[in-house]
Image 1 (cartoon, helix red, strand yellow):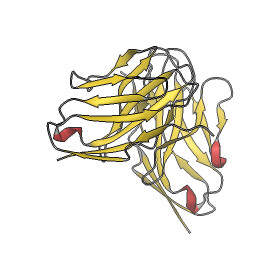
Image 2 (spheres, helix red, strand yellow):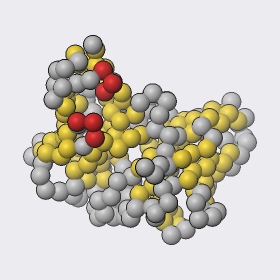
Image 3 (cartoon, chains in turn yellow, red):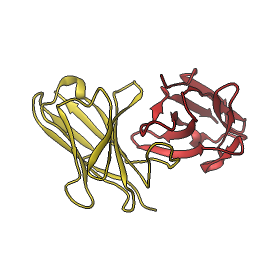
Image 4 (tube, chains in turn cyan, red):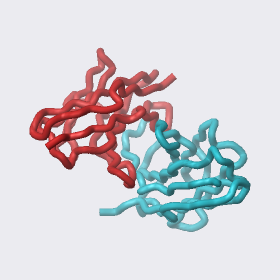
Length: 117
Length: 113
């Protein structure tokens, strides 16, 4: 069964450093998402991406964050200058069609635990 | 504003007994409701969803959920709990106007032998 994969599983970085979290969505999926889950808190939406553009983003997704689909398989989340409060589990998700009014299912990767020291 | 409430932080059930994990929601448009499960150190695994039609939805591992429009609820159920069902369960909702899923806080389900 196809799965969303994410690398690395755990990333430790120093405050102020740039990190790139990588995801390989399911191959025939067209919509991609990043969510995060700070320890003990709710899962929070960051951004959705379709057709090489951001389709929706939350208030969390400020100028320090960016997303890219550099090739036909990878989907990346970059944090330019990490802060302590960026420490969280970051989940990538993909779905076949997505979009407003569409009733598809988002499938999630195993997550990357980001620790900012 | 859209929101999801899972009123119980933890639910304890004896193995073999029925289980219910509660979820209520608030959306402005038509609700599309989802349940996901998270095992320790694992990702979010899809269990089932309600889109339209029959209010009782069946999903993976014997789980089902009942959509109740008047009570704006989508409770997760299983007739006979297994120890292996112990995990963190999340309810999520999206509506016609948003790509994102809105999540509940999660309910820790503990099944005791």
